[in-house]
Image 1 (spheres, helix red, strand yellow):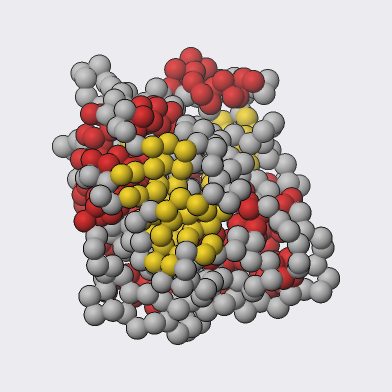
Image 2 (cartoon, rainbow, N blue to C red; image 1 turned 90 degrees about the vertical axis):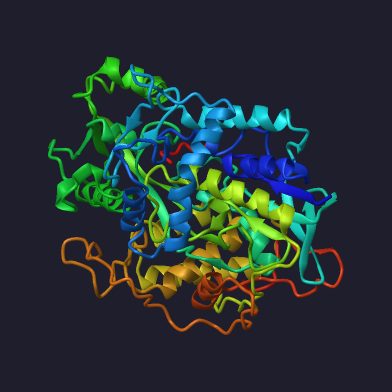
Length: 557
């Protein structure tokens, strides 16, 4: 019987665990908090899929490709939208009660950059909570072993293959396969919609094990997090219901950036907010939902309504202050269509993975669907994989020069550095500065905790990727890009060509390797902190401090 360890307990991890168990595997789910302490639980906006005769998978695919600026993998997009309806049916069968219209059909919402209303919700704005609860109940009833409050320290690698994990504290859990589903890395930034646990654990562990990563420059910043009190996301769906964005003068400014105004792709709206804030001395812009009315807001968005009112605001009567915040990582560990990475025995799903679905920018409400679709595929693949069909790679080390004047490391200093120099608006000077400081921190002989070490490693790869992509595209905005417009220095359409320098050499693809994945790896050529000492199940060091080194998440998914 194949033994599988799934690290993470959101929609991607639990779906993978259930499908692996149902395919005959012995499965253990390991999660750093309690089972429901996930990004999924906080998903407000819903899950996008074709469930109406008025909609088509071709339309959903077109919207996904448009949002991704054409840098998506078309095959991955086809899988996402084609298998989406079946995953919705599976969620319903597992107990998720999506909102229904009076005729009993699904109630479908319209969100930014979708051509038609296709976003399903549960409990108004509590979609993630409903999905998390249903999948959690299903896993508890399935015989899957659960290990809660267990932090991944690193992957165990033997003879070039992942053979298990090591937990913080030293315990080792061996397995035939490991599926990483640890979410993203929002804690890289000073302002984020992500929970405190979103520290890039799976991505960092994969990098240390020698796995390829890609597209880490593509960080999505959500346009509307509450600017009062603790960070809290105000769903895209609120703007879909008719809320507008205004500046201090009461003017709707989003149309200055895009003809779709508040319903333009997130990266465009987030930058429009940032520019409007800069023009008024950094003060937050405001989300005006007064036309929707307090009664409808409370009914449609009960979770957001409660959070708004807890802060002493009445959004049914007055506009509320909002700010952009780091929200979702489009890049991650490179996988094929079944979640396989470039390291045998290692799979990745959900926000941890770079499936190619999102391209340069994620379409609203596609993340939950990606977790369900590719989690299911990975869970089934682990049961049948005998020969690893993905080519190995030899990642190159980062070439970043330490800054001798770097300030002392703290997590807050790291987050502010990333927000300032690798945030919504980037340029070569800021990214070079960030690379030097990060290199100095990495090479310092300091004993950091697991999460801080992971954040530092992932930050270094984000900055490296952002430096190499010199043109603006999707969520990656270079204010010094030659294609930038006069208005905002980067809203001009990208050509689709990859402007980055030639990639470092990688190992030749195996004869039976997935040619699409091989092409991604060859073009992305990630830097890595891979530990070559894998002749025995030795842990890859978590901190790697001396080695040079690529949403609560409240998300409108």
